[in-house]
Amino acid sequence: MAGASASDEGTKPSGGSLPFKPDYTAAREMAIRASTYAGRGRDLYVALDYSDASIEAADEVGLRLWDSLPLGLSDAKAEEIRTLLIFELGAYFGETFIQNHGGHWGWATMAGRKVFGLRTASGFIAFPMHRARKRLRHEEPEPLVTLYRFLSRGQSTPQT
Image (cartoon, helix red, strand yellow):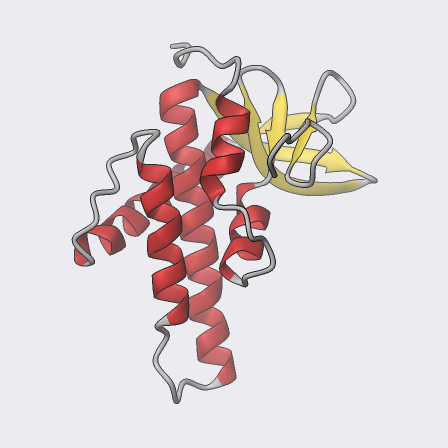
């Protein structure tokens, strides 16, 4: 994603072109999932402390966990674990961004469909779950920190 622009997959400028509705109930769920993921990091002796610098470590933890799933799991159980890992990593990414740069979890409307994502304080809409899924499935070679840095450009501290 070097040289990324707002039109890259995973982010869209929302300057009025994408309706977005914050979802505070889902935001609480994302905070819980992010905390669970931070606990997974602690179990591996990796500090996931919600700092900007921790995104790189979070990405590595996700890849380690994904690649170390035990053999012999049923397809359904393996998919359940993978889905949880995707949501937890995406939630950690989003919660870290929101705490450090502001923004909201919510629903964007794209092509008549509601899609869950994160709107930054500067108006970009990102889809951390989608990016986490692609990254963990080895469909995205760029680490999550690349997207995080792109979104962080031009952001200020969170507004309270």
